[in-house]
Amino acid sequence: MRRAGLALAVALLALAPGCGADESGSSVAVEEASAPSTVERNRIEVVESQGDGGLDAAALYEGLSPGVVTVISVFGGGQAPLGGDGGSGLGSGFVLDEQGRIATNAHVVSSGLGGSLEPAEEVYVEFADGNRVAARIVGTDPFADVALLEIDPAGLSLTPLELGSSDQLSVGQPVAAIGSPFGERQSLSVGVISAIDRDIQSLTRFQIGNAIQTDAAINQGNSGGPLLDAQGRVLGINAQIRSTSGGGVGVGFAIPVDTIQRSLEQLRDDGTVSYGFLGVSSQDLYPQLADHIGVDAEAGALVVGVADGSPAEEAGLEVGDETTEFQGQRDIPEGGDVIVAVDGEELDDDTGLADLIEGREPGAEVELTVIRGNERRDVEVTLDARELRSGTG
Image (cartoon, rainbow, N blue to C red):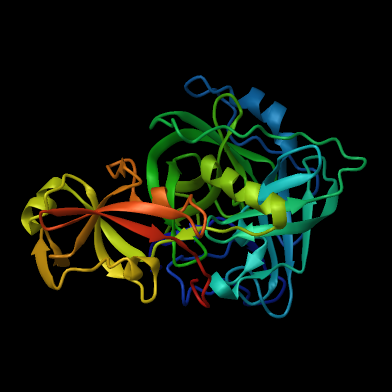
């Protein structure tokens, strides 16, 4: 029986017997899809088309499906997406503008993880009418699992999708996903937002925060496609599924559009991205835990690790020397630091430490409000840059 895990929703088209995704060396479990080995052109299938909670699925599909594309990535040198045995990867994407820019997932157009990430040798984009064109990878953001592609728009009638906002999402809000699950191009599914503010794995050792959980059917091949609201605005990029077999079971995840926009803005400039790096590992502090370890705070980030040579270490942040057990959790450090605010903005249930750090540029100076026991102090820190490492980054 296969172990349940988060599966990147990209279909692998096997070009040789035994092709598949290697699950070793990563906390992201990837299952191979039984996608067709030959391309079926100009096939349109509406999987679900009834309105749901104010979402007119049929009208949305008719208007926006021309802006959703299938992304075919060709890998050589014995590499397939996420370390498989070679072949082609099939995912989804969507048109950003009339200049030919297209958004998708980084894992759709690259193989490997972290510092071992390698771009596909060739990338093609196929539209709803079956027209297929070559695409160039402008750049990838492995920390957010976002990629920016570019095609020559000459002779094409493009349908750009409008980017919305993920700042005011509501659980129960109706959504729709369009993509190419299992190679079935231009498929539509509808559902609702099941949860918000989830953490999912990126292509690095860092997590992607504020992810959107949905019960709209997302399967392998949906990766890179849009998650849309009732007005047809992009709320996120469909990226992962939680599954024991690689098929969707009503638990899919999308990268929020606010995260996507930050990545795309940087990738448009020079094809690269940068993130501020503090160098701490932490866990959420809540009132009962705070009382147990004797910290005068209602919420915050309990420091459980400090990276060697990091800005956090240079600023004197420390992990407690003693450990305790509480509510079934072992080895909770006590006596060390708890970060309760960044530049005066307090951490709470909705705003975590990563939310307040990753959006800042390397070299930025931030003021951390830190509590150790009952002592409260402000610490100035100059952020470093996130770096990719081999393996998981």
